[in-house]
Image (cartoon, rainbow, N blue to C red; front, side, top):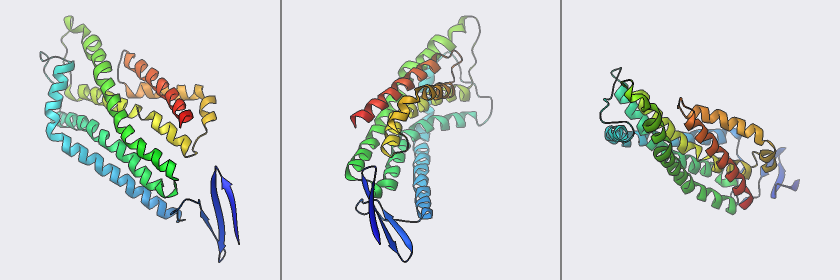
Length: 260
């Protein structure tokens, strides 16, 4: 015996064959599979993202030394020598810098694999939305890292951390300094994915648009906590910049939901 009903605008048919209910979403090509099959597929697709992450690190590593010297010259000073306090500190600092490049190519790959995972159950207009998200993710990551590079890092190093250079001699650890740089660059790139994640959550029915509007206080509390974690700035200027930026991106996300 078959029956049909609608759920969020999608027709869902229920058919009983030999005592077993089979559910389909009404999307052409959508086939009901066991939950274990979905979990295995999700695991495999996340593994692909990790492979891209490691490949990005491997590709960027030969150029990381020149990149570190460029960052040191740009934000600190050629008069200050790099100080390494352990044999592997230089290598670890290079790997952290490579991670920024690896994330730039892995985050769009994450959205693509998410699209492939959920693609069978999506309508054509939902698929078009996903295909727009992938290049948008890459561009937002680049924009976020550019903001961190040209705005936040100069404030941290040129005008704050090295302000006391006339009174004390600065000795900056290679790993600690580059760790702060990569945290800000990668953090800002990831932060700029917020609009896509919010729109995706609403489109997939994971959260309601009205709920986000009503829970603004909770959302802004989370934003403040995240900004304190992402920006290792003792002056809290970078944290305030990140918090304001996240608040703007969240409101921009709500606007995108209304438009799309």
